[in-house]
Length: 66
Ligand SMILES: [Zn+2]
Image (cartoon, rainbow, N blue to C red; front, side):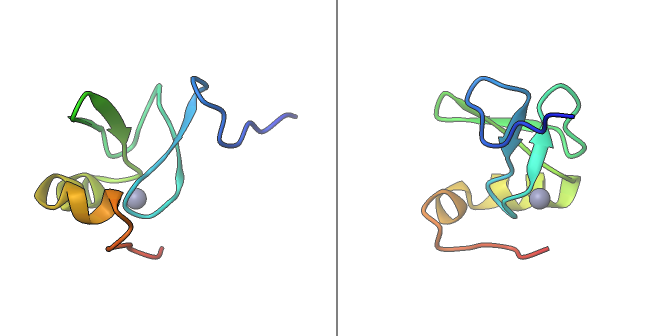
């Protein structure tokens, strides 16, 4: 079985809040568009956290370790 990691345009994207790999076809936490880029989340908590402070997570200033 092949597990694609970090494949651009593939089915997996990185949750910007906790760095987990998320299936873009069925993101458990839904998705959110910010500055023309769509982000996918492992859970609703990460989605909410990102929407509150997107810059903090994108800059790497904040991270939630799971
Ligand atoms: Zn997450």
